[in-house]
Image 1: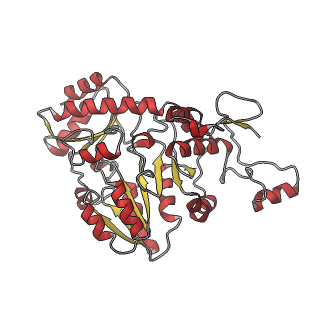
Image 2: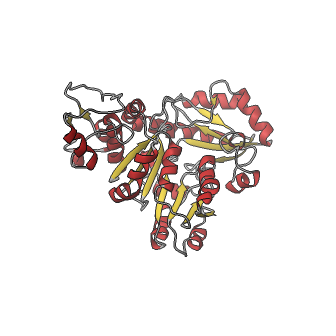
Image 3: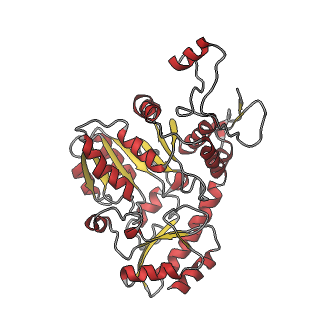
Length: 396
């Protein structure tokens, strides 16, 4: 067995966890985390194999269940989040789906915020009702709406804050209290805030999900997701679901994520600084109809941002005057910023949610989420902010 280097991890600060959390070295004493590209493992005897499967021995038996490289990533992220347990998945949507479905039974009730990523909306409103789940959507920014929806018993509550792409903020602490009073578990998609800018579990959330494809990789290389929860939820629900349905993260992708965590704090700090500068520029431009950025005083939940987040985030949403035609014209004129539906990348990426990330949702549903035909989502990267502003200025 390899030697763990995190025996004193309780005394570590964030930057140290990001670099060394979960590090387990093999007998070769490598500096960088090893990539264990193996599907299976061998046993010295038939008895050892039997004990490995009946739980007598705690060891790796199959990489669909667990893998040394993936386990290092899970442990590092667990330490950063402050959770009891963590499991990595093949994508962010695999994480969302598993978190929602692993404990759900026919007839159970799920309440969710209306402003959601398109695929999350599909899982909740198209897929889950097929299996008998009762789904209710609410205006996530309206605490009275949460109070009404959670006045009756609930099994699961799901929300993303900030939301994709309209950057609505939800009071996690308040919704967590209402959820627990109604007998449910609160699942928070924290991908836009990253593990650094927002701590849902500290605010009362039971389960946190990420698309690690975004900021945790941060360089557009690999797909991945993660679910953080209690040991009990992992044992009773999530662990068996993942073991038997198989949405496992690949070992090489886990290695990419480990390397991404090492620089996450440095990157997110630069992302947020750049995003605020770009948002201020756009807000002052005569050809912009509206700008949505939690770090601006003009954001409807700016006070909540300052209360529960460590910064305004890395994403800016805005709408040029002239609707879809003006939005397309702006995107096509950009020379530096790339048109792409990904986000959280070192490169600045821009997309038109109405026709890309939320294209599959009905028009009335998009409008109810606050997504208009002219809305643009900009993931602000690590370039020089002045170059990004100059590119936007030329395009406008």
